[in-house]
Image (tube, rainbow, N blue to C red; front, side, top):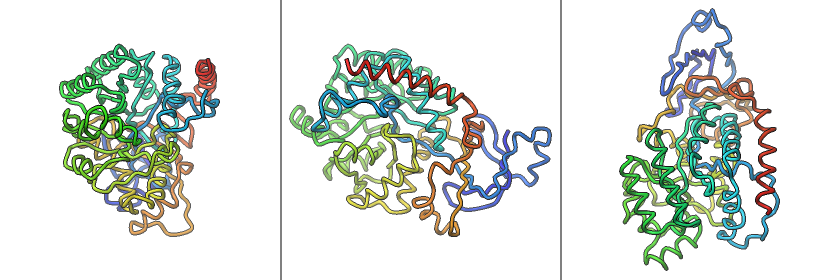
Length: 424
């Protein structure tokens, strides 16, 4: 067990403040206890006592939508063709990259992503993976890498017909195999790369495994145009007709280009929507709006980075253009990942997942002005310690579970191999 001494504890739900000694129980989905005397509780092992005097302790964070497979893209060379639209961004960048991934590249993508998440305060990651020529065991590779670092996870493989029905079948088989022994979701790329037979099989697997669908929805107008032309209906209508929105575990990514009826369908369904504002801005596909979608809204990074505090700020500031987001709703979306995981009884996001921030403010921080500090003050550089499932995985900003430098040095080599392969 770990004791956090003299911590300014902020309850993530009520935002109540209190100065406490916190005993953190070790194990999946365990709890925390407030104690009077920290020194005598673990007097025989002072290394398990962390002095948090003047520091904030609160529940750690979670990523609602990530892409491990993009981790080794940072700084890579220009694509063979300068993309002129979103379809070409996919074709010349991301689909070029994912086709080149092998098992070693997947492993180091996952390790470096998990480290980045941990150091930014996230102890739970919902990931959406693609590696069409290295499908088999890809989810197990990612899971083991995350667990080595100490990050809990909810994974899926991005099933798609874009590389042929044989690879789509491999994606379905990988998903079915993984879900037999692990919590996870049934991943789909997007409506425009999924035929009716594959969609039907995916939803059937979702039902059989008591899982949910994780899919990109109307990220670009071209997704809607394809659906209307091919199926005579809009994307959300199509997914709803197949039963993909029936599960409370289903996550719809992006949801930018929706009409009012689609928004009503989502609001009345059990599904959740995850917004990824920075990715949308980067790809020039539009601005997210939560108008008419209900309260089941999450925040993700879409593989752009692993810093959820940064994602919350972007969602808030960029949302001034098109969204009804406010101080409180920005924080609610940031924290909704915990509600999603709890409602669906996924493991690994218990109250013994904590983050310690060394936050020095020129103004008083209280319950009444917390949102202002959250949006204009907090940042990931202030995170000193992170506890995941009651285990200290970051201490004084240094990884405790893995050798970060060793992994990064190796990932440099692996990334170079990937880039050369992409250039061929």
